[in-house]
Length: 486
Image (cartoon, rainbow, N blue to C red; front, top):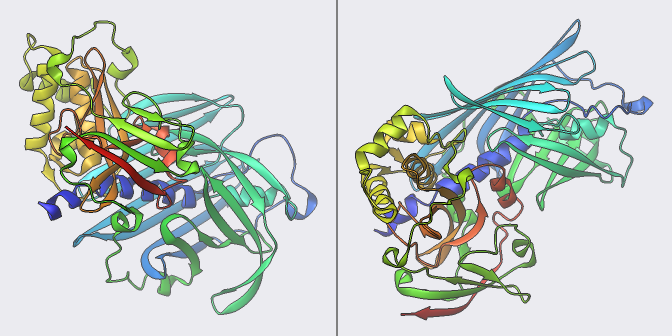
C-alpha cells in the first residue's frame, strides 16, 4: 500500500516541474512597450541552430535544440525539448515542441506549442491582437478558445532574458515583464534584475557574460548571456539547469540514474501522524512565503497572524442540504476540464441517475473514478477527455476527470492542489472540492469524502493558480503543532 500510495502522488510535482521548464525555455519576443532599446542592444546575434543540455544537480536528464530563421518581414523560432524522468522505477519521456513567428518589429504574431508524454497530448496555439491574447488550448483536434485581455504583448518566458538584454538593462537595474504560460493559461508579471557580470566556462572557453536573475513567483531563476545576447546557461527550480553544448554532446544520452522529483520536493514531517483519516483537526506552522499564497485561507482552513494554519474536517454528507444557487463558474467547462464534451456527459449519465441527490451523485462519481483509473505516475498537462479515454493517471488525472464528471452531473466542482501526509513526509498532491449546499473536499485517489485534514490546500483552480506554487516548490517550511482525533 505504501508504494502504491506514493506512486500516485507524483503528478503535481511533475506538472510543476513541467511548468518550470516552460518558464525556462519557451522562446518568444521582446516586449512591445513602444520603447526602443539603447544603441548597444538593438539586435541579438542568434545562431541559426543551438543546443542546450538539461541537468538536475549535475545529472543529464534532457536536451533542447533551437532553430532560428530570419526572412523578409519577420522570423521563425522552432524548439524541441526532450526530458527523461524516472519516478519510483517508472521512466517517462516528455517531448515539447514549439514554433513562434515574429513580425518585422520582433513582436510575436503567433505561437504553437505541443507536448506529448506517453498516452497524453497537449496543444496551445496563440495569436496576438491589439489588447488581446487569443489562445486555443487542450487536446489536439479538440481545442477550446480563450481570450485574455492584455495591456501589452506578453512573453513566453524563454526569451525573457533576451528581452531584458534588448531593453539595455543596466547593472543593478530591474524591469517587470508580463509572462504567459500556455500550460495553465496563466499571465504573471516577472521582475528581472541585472546582476554583476561573471566569467563562466562554455564549451571549454572562459567567457565574460551578462547575468540576469528573475523572480518567478518567489523562486529565483538566473541566466548568463554572451555579449551578443545569446543565452549560454540557465538555472531554475528543484536543481534544474541548462547549459550550451555542442550537438554531439547534447544528444549523447541521458543519465541512467532516476531523478525522483517527488522525493526531492517533499517535506519531512517533524511529528509522525498516526491514522490521518481519524484526525478531526490539524494545526501546522508555515513559513512567511507560504502564508502569502492567495488560496491558503478560507473554507475549512484558517490562517492566524502567527502563521498557524488550522485545517478542520468537514461534516459528513448526511448533514448537508443542497442549495440551488450554486456558483455557476464551477459548472463551466475549461480547456482541461471539458465537462460539456459529449463523451464526458455520456459517462456521467452512466454513473449517476437524474433522480439522485447531489450527495449521492458525488459519492458515485468519486467512487467510479477511484475504481476505474489505473494508478500510475504520468508526466503530462492532464485533461479530462484524454484521462477518460485512457483511464490511467496519478492525482492530477484523477482530479481533472472528477471535476469534469461532477460538473457534467450539475455538481459545482473545483481542483485543489497542495500537500498530503504519507509515511512521515508531506507530498505534493491534487484533489477536488464539490459544492452540495456548501463546499466539501473529496479525493478520488483514496475514495475519501470528506478528504482527511492532512490535505493542506495551497492553490485552488485548474489554471493560472498553479503558477503560484512555483515560488515555493521544494522550499516550504512546515511544522506540525497540533493533531486532534475523534
